Image (cartoon, rainbow over the protein chains, first blue to last red):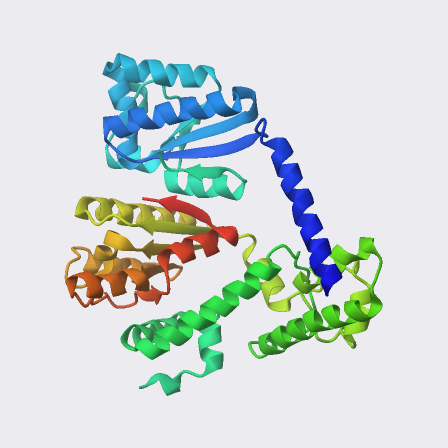
Length: 146
Length: 266
């Protein structure tokens, strides 16, 4: 039994070394950010989180989706008037971040994505925000709720 | 009716989601009323989750043998025997370095009770493909790969709780309309418990409606939160019918994510 323990410890040690070697830079990441809060401060905080995430991982290493539903869709309504919000979203989009909007929410709140929301096209609409988040997680995206 | 009416086998089937809708609702009702029954279900869930966790990386394959509810116990026993056999066989054999990890990982291989005649033969063929679990293979064949979603509610504000139910409703309807097989668990802990406390919630009727419309949606309340409420505020939480009490909300979040469930906080 001593040999078993020793070999397991050796394996754990090797794993630890490997993990350590990678700590210098991050591997490619797939991440989904979930925004359902109508609070502008929370939304701006989330956008800052995302920018920091890009800064840490590098935009070429990051496949990052933002899924908005419920109150979260208000972020794109606010961006129609709020230059600061608009600027942050624009900057993130230029770095390859995708923003998705829940069709259920548009229907429920009677919003027209073409006129009521900032820079949304048909390909950005998903049938259900929550189902989209679940599907992304099943494809290996990591869930972050800022 | 008392808890003796539920055999170990019936409860196992309940935990494994193998009951008819009618049996299930009867069980929910009873479990909700009966503390000791609830504890037994908790224990069974724990065992099942531990077993699944250990086996979750093993690929399933179809099998001809008709395993039923009873077969699970013998499966489990075979698993324990195999693990023991591996340990003993290995201590006796003292294999070379390169065999060690393979030998160790055998404990996670799904055993087939028919195939394993002696633990030694199993220990010496570590590269043999994993044996199928008939029940699981059948489920997968029947259902495709089901969507499994855990929705976490830990905030007690009524408008938020209403939104959380909107999400549950929309999601369940979406999966039904898209003919996607799905399981949805709504886990409530901390202040989120308010959603299913009969004395404080505004949503009793709505939750009953969701439970009636969608038998793939289960509401689960954290026992730790219920205990804390009693300890700190002297409140004995009365839960809505059909709400299942689980040992720990946070532990459930971890278990489910380990099992490949999607996690969403609303």
